[in-house]
Structures are given as structure tokens and as C-alpha cells.
Image (cartoon, rainbow, N blue to C red; front, side, top):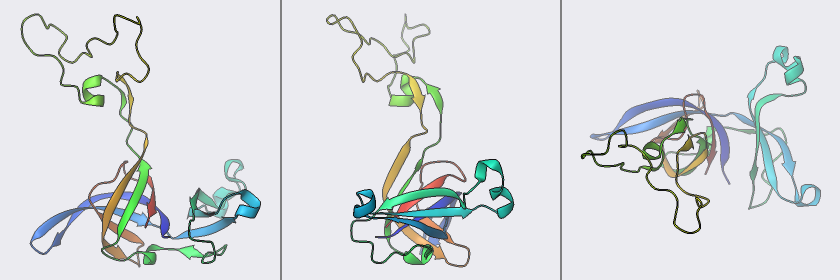
Length: 198
């Protein structure tokens, strides 16, 4: 199983033959294996990896005491732990051009939004008698029981959710700069932490 951490840099585009392809640039790794969890000790098999080393100067501060990496996450492993050792480095060389990958990250937060933006409701028509009601939700209750059902699509907070985009194609790999160019867009803004799975 292939997995690595990365940080979204931004979007760009490259030429492939006579076609321009949109790409997202990701600074992927290097990540370091910090812990291996086994069924005997933890009840499940997983590999914990660290990304973005913290300098010794900052590590001595109270908030960073004992932390070597800025980000620590673990990945479940289905096909055994024999290929992993504590201290091993994982970099972009585990992928190759043309690979299909899944990317998970936190989407951009958009704050409190109405039903038109959040759920795609078309709103009311602009005919007579619809003053100040163009983007309202409409009726939410029922005759019986006299209450709003749980799960009703209503205004509320939008974004800041973990999302996974599947089957993204690896377009280019830069081993020297630890860069991964992926076809299409991924959730989140610049410097968003992303989980990449092969």
C-alpha cells in the first residue's frame, strides 16, 4: 500500500500533446515512519508517519516539547507490516506517472450560508408578491407532526469538512523538490495538509 503526506501549493497547468491539462501541485514528503501499530499491542495494524520536521529551537518551547514533527497521522495497512520499519523515509518515489491516487483534505470554510448556496436550491421566482423572498428556504414544517424533521436541508455552516477525491491521475513527479503534479483540483486552500493514498 502506498501512502504519503503532502501540502497543497496551488494550481497550474501543463501541456500534454495538443491539450492543456489543469494540475494541482503538492509538496509530498519526505515523511518518516515514527510508529508501527500491531494487532497484538494495539488491536489493529497501522503505520504512523510524521511530516514537516520542527526545528530544535522551536521544539524546546512549551507547546512543542517532545514533538519532532508538525503533523502526525496513521494509515491502516491491510497487506501486512513486513515492508515497514521505524525510521524509514517515504518520499514521492513510491509513485510513478500515470498512477491513480486518492487524496483527502479539509475543504475551505465558507461560514454560515443560506440554502441556495449550501444545497443548490433554485429559490423563488421573481414574479409579483415575492418581495425579499427570492433566496429564502420556503416551507420547512408539516401539518402533522408539527415540527421540523431531523436532517432537513436548511441554512447552516458550510465547508471545513474532510473530503476525499478518488482516482486522480499523477501527471508529473519531481524527486529533487518532492513535488507531485496531480490532474484536476483537490479540496482546501494553499498550505492545506493532504493525505495521499495509492
